[in-house]
Length: 489
Image (cartoon, rainbow, N blue to C red):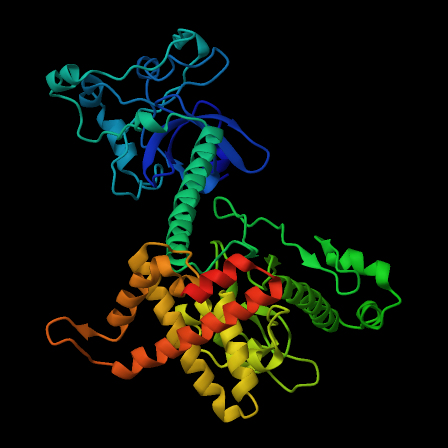
């Protein structure tokens, strides 16, 4: 019979705690699942496996066990304690010989020494119990006065861990939730500052984000059905209502799970792409990407893959491995510009101007161009005049980007982060427009010269065109106030 099979309640062993250190403990009972419930010297009960206990060299006497059993009930066994110094000195040679024999008592292989106890049978009458009391460790003065205490001491457990496992788990979860909230608030603050500083995000279009808490995934993603455009949390179950559709029939009749998953991804991506296109055309709603971010992302950073129609972040599009039906192997390095053309623009934008916007660099200036109605009207007017040839697309891009740079500089100087291009030609703020133009052209106050004189001339002509556009808009909408305002400017 092995040593572990001979254990019984009341035996003193060394048990391994969560800090990977060994402490003296007394066996309370053996459980059916191969575990043992032990009690440590500070009164904490813990269930551990058999491989996390090891034998002690000796067992304490009844007087020593009284120090460990002050917090136990009469039916429970006593916990382990340190032997007094007087008894440790009075050990008999025969007992020492038994201790030194490795066959009888296997040694403890650890960095921390374990206490040596004398194996002795004890009865319940020998254990003094005071109900409702707790174990009080010896004071520092008593330990200092006792010079004969053996150096082989067991390090006591810290008092801070004297909590239940339920409280420990709740504390860990609360700490994770607090960390998640702090990280999310910092990210949102950074993103909000970046967006509001340039007036890019007006809060109309958003990106679906995750709601994970404490590092645990929350399965709450919503997908849109391709056939009825109703948001569904369980799209696979919902597709049974559209069994008459060809794609659904192919999905339900697929022979292998790999083919079913491929068709399911195709249906899901097409439904979400159809919903995202409606959001982009209307200018309000929530974009459903393939991978939801855990922060408030910019909607302009997401665009569809031209092959699978899944919406990804343009900065992470290079990671996307697209496997389309009918293609051999994976398609790596999807063209970002091709996906940008698939993203629809608002209904007020013409197809020729959409072609010009697709070639813009994705930066702060392009976002300003897309979100300003006056610059959009200027770009459409230039497309009507020069859009007959694709060679003129770069000319149009350069002119609208120059106006957008002037608008961004005007926002930073005037302090109005949400100013529009129509504010550049307003009489009340025209002095700020002049200062912004001089700063862009690098005007030198001492020499009264421009380092970029042609840039100021181009911007001036663009401002005149925008003024005429606003006048025509006022005439069409019969707005007398707007017409007078633009004529005075």
